[in-house]
Image (cartoon, rainbow, N blue to C red; front, side, top):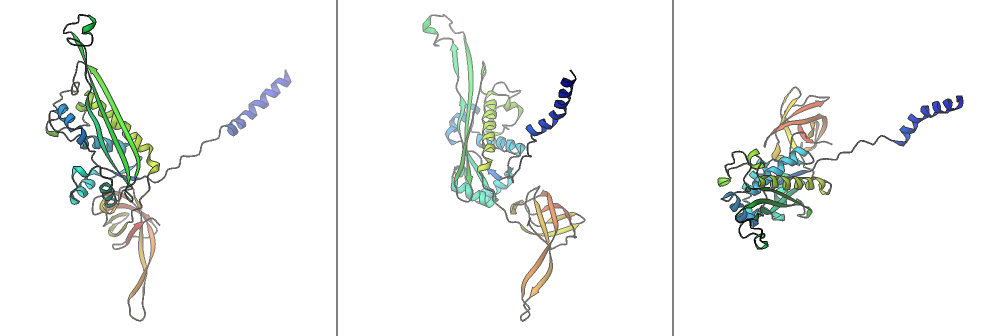
Length: 333
């Protein structure tokens, strides 16, 4: 008995060490730089007639579904998504029409101007209904003699399918192709039925992200297809190259540790970026002509961007020196 207790005590003393050896702590997940992507409004030309049948008018479902997709990508955090306002401005400046949405070369050009790593283009390939009447006059049950007469059950099914392509902005190469498909069906309702106080999509004046639309069966199908598409795009993040945007700006104002620089989103600066502030320590001149040969810069510290618009950005400075107006701002060295 005494020997048994001794062995048991030894086993209990050793077991924690064994547990530590057999169940190692997993290493922390490594995170690479987030890729910057832009999403073009999806093309819906092939389903335009189906869209008109659903809403009673021509509604730009391409823009609506793109908005939903962008929202999901932003919330997930896998990518840094370029603001729609910046994309719309470039499209306007370049005179791009809806017909250019799916063109790989045109999309790649837009992506380069925006400083994106890749650009997403796509098509809505199915949008509408697949209804069936079970029972009732003239139904499949009629010839079997069930005698249902005009009594029947109406089942409405909404189907939405989307495809997207991720395009390398430097080569125009398609890096990945992703699809999403959503279905929803109910009995005794229409595609736009089931929403609270649904007022239709007259003239395209509706929000696909609204609770009214999301409660309809076509809204449920859109939501399912878009969610699948977003998941597929996120799973392909490793295939995307990282496009390094070279920042070359100047300090416009320095008050304490709050720094304003003269470059913004148009130059590729975004909230969360870390940049180096450089100060010219000495200027080397040609002793014969007095011409400036080069300027020697030393790093003062870095700023983390906290807000940005098209032409400027604000950041918080940390470092050994005090930045001054005219100091240069560059990518981290």
